[in-house]
Length: 432
Image (cartoon, rainbow, N blue to C red; front, side):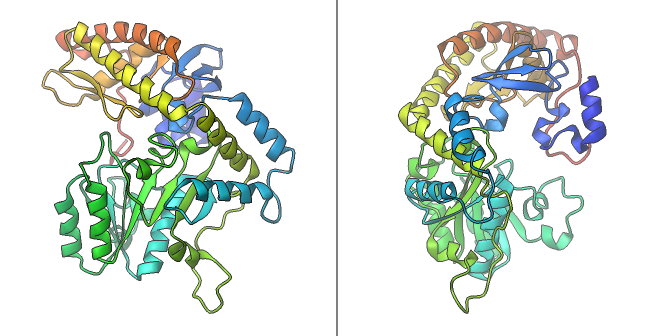
C-alpha cells in the first residue's frame, strides 16, 4: 500500500471524503494522491501527467482550472467577501439564472452537495403529501448519504430498522414494478425519486408514464439530475426527454468542480420551506451556512456562460460518439468485442469488462485500468469535458491498443498472470 494511502487512511475514515475516491476503487498503480489538474489532465505529486476521464467524479465539465471561471470567481466572489451576513447579489443572480434556465423550476434552493438537496426533496414531498414512504429506483447507484437512501442499500449498518422500512425500491424501465408498489402501499407513497436515465435512454414515454402514475396515486415525481444535468442538455435531461418533474435536483457539472447543488421545483411545493406565509406550518427545508457561498454561485454563472458560448453539450455528445466507436473498433481488432464493450448514451458512455463466461469481471476491469494507466490514461469511468479534444482521443486510442491487447491475453491465460495488485471493489458492499 502506498505511503500516501496509509497516511490518508490513518487520518480520514476510508482515506477520502467520498467512498468513490477510496484506494479500493482503483488499481494499485493508480496515483494515490493528486497535486493539481489542468484541462483534461491531472498530475500527481511528482508531476506525472495523466489524461483523465474521471473529471472529479463527473463534476468538471469544462476542464480543470478553467481560466475564465477562476478569474470570474476571484473578481466577483472571493474579492467580494465570499460569504456574507445577508443574501448576496450573486445569490440572487444565480437563482434568477437557474429558474429561467430549467422550465420545471419556479423556485430554487442551493446547497453544497447532492445528498443535501435530494434529502430536502424527499422531505418536501412528505410534507406536501402527508405520507411517509419513498419509492426510489434501485438501478441508480446513489442518491444521498442520508438514512432514507443508505437504509435501502447493503451498507445499512447504523440505520434504524424503522427508517429502512420507509424506502421501497423499483426497477428502472419497468412500469409494472412501480405499479406494484403503489398497489402494495396505497395512499402511503409520498414520492418517486429517480434519475431520468440509467446507462441507456429510457423506454419511449416511460418517464411520462411514471409521472402520470405518481399523480394518479397522489405522489410527487422527483428527478435527480446530478449526473444528467448539464450533460444531456443545458436545460437538463428532463427537457431532452420532454417531461417536467414536480421537483428536481442538480449538482456536479453545474459549477465546473466548485461545490454547488440545487433543489428546484414548483412554487406550490417549494414555498412550504418559506417564511412569509403567516399561519402556515413551517418545514425546515435547507439551512446551510455555506449553501450560498459566493464562489460556487459565481462558478455556476461563469460555467453556464461558457457552455452556451462554446456549445459544450454538442461537443461532449460528438466526442462520446467517437470514443465509443474507437473503443469498440480496437476491441474488435483484438477479437474481444464480445468481452469488452463501450456503449451507452453518447454524452455519458460506459464500458463493460466481461470474462470468458461473458459475466461482469472486476479483475478484468482492474486489469484494463492498470494497463491504461501505464500509458498515461486514467479511465475509472467515462466523464467527458470540453477539454477532451482530438489529441486526447488519439492518446486514448494508443492506450487502448496496449490495454486491450493485454486484456485479450488475460482472457486466454487468466487475469492472474497480468494483474499486479489488488482487485477493485464495488462501493456498496456489505463487508470490506
